[in-house]
Length: 171
Image (tube, rainbow, N blue to C red):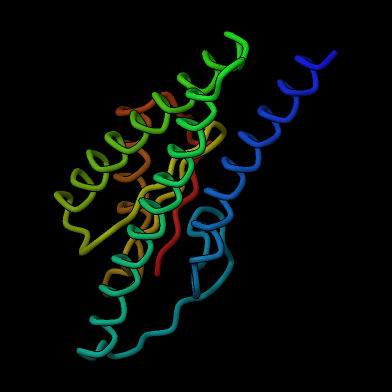
C-alpha cells in the first residue's frame, strides 16, 4: 500500500510539472490571436523601432520562460529518478518524460529555424503531448493564408502532429 501511495504522489508531481510548463508558456503570451479560423480583423499600423524591440523582447522572454520551465521539470524528474526506493515503473516514466522534453527542445529549435528560413522575422514553437503551438512575429500586412500554409507544411512534415493539433498565433 505504501508503494502505491508513493507512486501516486510521484505521478501527480510529474503531472503538475508538465502542467506548470504549459501554463508558464501560455500565460507568457500577451496580445495574440489565433490565425487558423480567426474572425479577428487586423488593423494596419506603422511599425516603429520600439515595436520591433518589444517583439524581439517578447520572443526572447518566451524562449527564456520555456527553457526555465523545461529545466525545472527536468530537475524534478531527475530528483524523482535519484530518490531511493522508487519503483522501476516510476523511474521508467521519469526517464521517458526527460527524453521527451529533450526531443521537444531539439525539434522546436529545428522548426523555428525552418520557419525563419521561410522569411518570417521570428517565431517560437512550443510542443506538448497533444499539440504544437507556433507563435510568429506579425508580418507586414498580417499572416497570409500562404504563410500559414507554409508553417502547417513544416509542422506536419517534421513532426507527427496533424493540422488539427496545430495552433498558429501571430504577435
